Image (cartoon, rainbow, N blue to C red; front, side, top):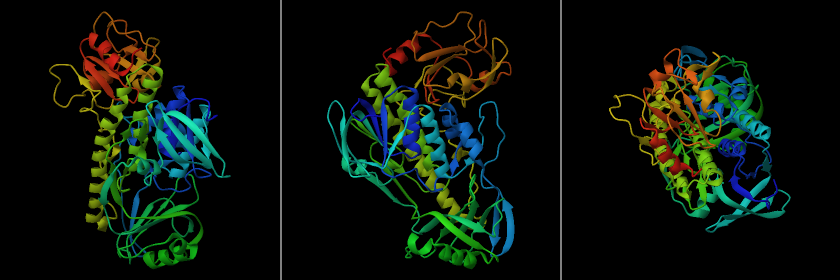
Amino acid sequence: MDGAAGVEVLIAGAGPTGLVLAIDLARRGIRHRVVERSERGFPGSRGTGIQPRTLEVLDDLGAVAALQEAGGPCPPVQIWDGPERVRERDLVHRAEPGPATPYPELLMLPQWRTVEVLYGRLEELGGEVDFGTEMTGFGQDADGVTATLRRSDGSEETVRAEYLVAADGGRSTVRKALGVPFTGEPVDPRPVLIADVMLEGVARGHWHMWPKAEGGMLAVRPLEGAETFQVIAGYEDVTYEPEVARDATPEALLALLERRTGLPGLRVGEVTWASVYRARAAMAERFRTARVFLAGDAAHIHSPAGGQGLNTSVQDAYNLGWKLGAVLRHGAPEALLDSYDAERVRVAADVLGLSTSVHAADRAHAEDGLYRRGPETLQLDLNYREGPLTRELRRGVPEGALRAGDRAPDAPCVDASGAPVRLFDAFRGPHFTLLDLTGESAPPTVPDLPWLRTYRVGGPHADLHDTGGHAKSAYGSGLFLIRPDGYVGLATDEAGDVAEYAGAVAAG
């Protein structure tokens, strides 16, 4: 895309956050540009778990089938003590798909493959990434952002955009340039080495863990869709400073594996990627500064325990995408964009707390390898009940019932011809969806807006028949306005409330 030809949104960073935002903007017809300083996508396995709520997001964006083909379920954990097998256990919550939750379990695949799939989806929508292009500086005024880009050949370019989204990672240069405080604390002082390696002598059917290994915990997991294994080695010596160049060579990794496992016949080949980290939690003080937004690791970093970081980052982008679309295409008030900060700061704070607590539980359950993850890590219960866009206007809502601000559940229905249609099929796309579950004989009088689709579920002249009663069971009675990011924005019994709410999120 020509940088001088009216870019509306400039995205710095082409990891999962930047790519998901680009996909969402592309399907909305928003002129955008993605710049990434590396010459290719992220090469490592780092964020390997995609939670059920994120799978729902990626279903809406048209990427879930390719991800499911590439990935697989979390394998059972084999606990070892040296060369002796101790016991086998599950690490994650197991469940079967249900009417409200078509994706009940974590999907595992290396992050580099997730990035490949997302990039492929962006290309299908006509988008692209400018690899080898770094944003070296920017300034903003009342009307937009002016950024300087430098390509790998040293040439420079100036680009003008209405908004800038920083998806440039935990060391975000954009966040630093804005002067936004990034406050946090260490979660664990012990260093960890993580590497993707060619490895022989370890079976691929399990996630192998040596919780009591000499020098620190060791975990070895086969990577989905690849011949490599992910090796995670913790060090009990907090003063030790692992170095990739020294500790992640094939020779060094073989010596470490032999020492910690006692297994015979191990062979280590190519190391395709390696990194060192100490678990830390930190969050930006704010996610919006005028026309610049922070998303993903640029806004918050987590302990990897519980698999929350990548998922929270993807959902940052999903929250922001529809709001940028509403402002840039549907005349929504610019103040709508403030809700991104208000909603995501609270969610990020909660998820950071969850990641840190899971990390602490892992330490407390070190004998078992890792603490068993519960349903709270699936992110299906995250909500915006206290958010500025939430309107719960029904009276007498039962305790424990779905409320405005909650994730909108799925449910199997059939259309007038008898063909199966899930509610997620009705939601899929960049529009708002109004579900009429009032059962009234006359349809509600609601605004005729290009970005709003209405479905009568059950009752006379139904668009969708709730043959199994699953929609009624999930939602109860009323009118439910579902936001493009799959959350209930408005729950009411009065059709007039729909027009009033529409005015708050788009002018027409």
